[in-house]
View 1 (cartoon, rainbow, N blue to C red):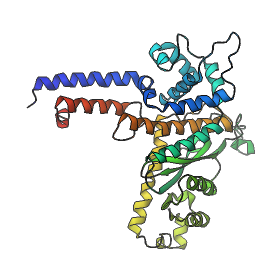
View 2 (tube, rainbow, N blue to C red; view 1 turned 30 degrees about the vertical axis):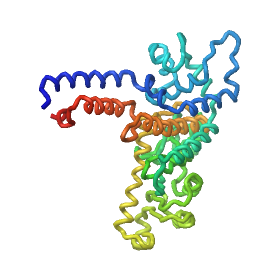
View 3 (cartoon, rainbow, N blue to C red; view 1 turned 90 degrees about the vertical axis):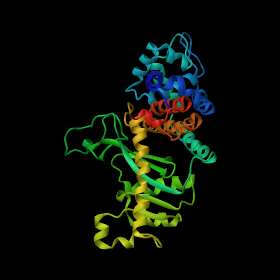
View 4 (cartoon, helix red, strand yellow; view 1 turned 180 degrees about the vertical axis):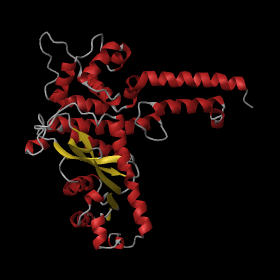
Length: 373
């Protein structure tokens, strides 16, 4: 029998744990669990491009510390590199946790370091992480879900006159185009992602201008996904990808086609025509709705890993921004497993706080129901 006073004391301790975990955030803990070899690999990219050549009369910072600072920028969803520079300047504990000394890098130093990283090496690193996750057993299942999301461009339109072609182009970004989004037409990019539904881990990414239709990009994203995990059992996508060509491509890959038909398709043919052989309509819809795994991937990367806030223009920096978000997504899958979390979560250690509380409750002999009253 647990006394009432014990409950009150334990709640106070748990509140102390929860507050401390939220204050310390990822800077003090996440880098203990992120694979060091991956951080070193990203730092090696900058070194190869000439970062470890300190200039005369210039303060020099290690590439590994700057990589951690960029990760912190995405984890804390900061608006700009200037915010990151001020954060490092104001908080000494965070600065030391990243490997800096008394001084922290300025906005210009961080911006220059991003240029040394580039985009192509990060793309290669993302697919290397996919292989690592597959080897370690994190990628489970053979059902691929494909979908796209928009990323608003950090640019204005070339012209405000709707009659001119420049109305659909970016002022300082040739890669951005006006495209349809849930919020209406806007200047944006489109990020196509293929995800394994059971593990909810992305395995393929393709970035295109905002005016490219989903139907025209399906072949490219499917080819990348099949290269990463061949012989899928099923491939699902929404009606934006619906076409006879795309259905033939899925069947050629040896998978069951679960592309939702459009209203125009259903006017011409019955739904049973689109259901794979040997599959009932009930199973067809059950498999189709599992594609919400890719929607949750977008929710994590846009809501918690800064994907929806690019402060860069042109194609190469945009690709760098997108792949950095998804590289961090893959790293947090590994970090969550290293921390022993029951489910992978990518919020800034809210779940880590809950696991600390659960372990404390178990050691104190209290039941979960005691804390729900």
